[in-house]
Length: 241
Image 1: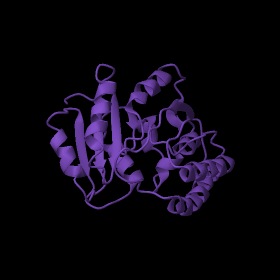
Image 2: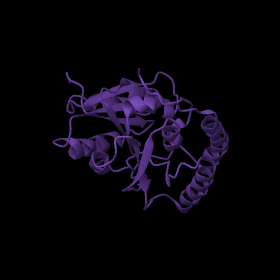
Image 3: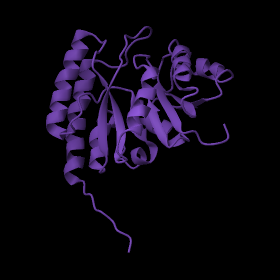
Image 4: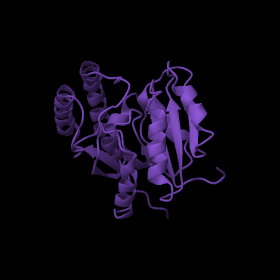
């Protein structure tokens, strides 16, 4: 690919060998003929056949690029490294487990086309979640606390499908788990965000890499940190004279 595409689809993965081929095919089906795009997979040092599967797929999918973490670094680092390597001015992210529907990416692009220029993040909103009851309950509880503390007016920050401007994202403060707080961080930077209802699917293969307890433990610390960032942030308008 010689020229920069309009859109880069960034997908972080860890031990998802059976999900990469069908998800990549869905991305291609959703976007070919719609916009110029590339697909940037970031393998977070998988211990199964994920990397080999991705490398094998490159021959048949010219849009596909594959990055590999030499050491496991987590989802936020994988997303950020994918965005840094991306060539597109706008980024769409998807979880690598197949629960996000690539067919929703054109919907996000259409929403961006009809929105004001200061909206720099379009966040997926899983209105019909296909997770277990315990996960849905834990997410509802966590979202309520986050919205109360951060006042980000976002019903669902845990959804992996998002569309955002690359330059705006790279100006945000980086920390582990930052991908869960993108609406609040974008708003802190002076941009507007918009939640868009999207499809959500059951995981068809593989296992989740998270559980309710570890999410809750890191979430408490993260919330306090993001709230501190918001309190300490300062926006200044600049006029060139």
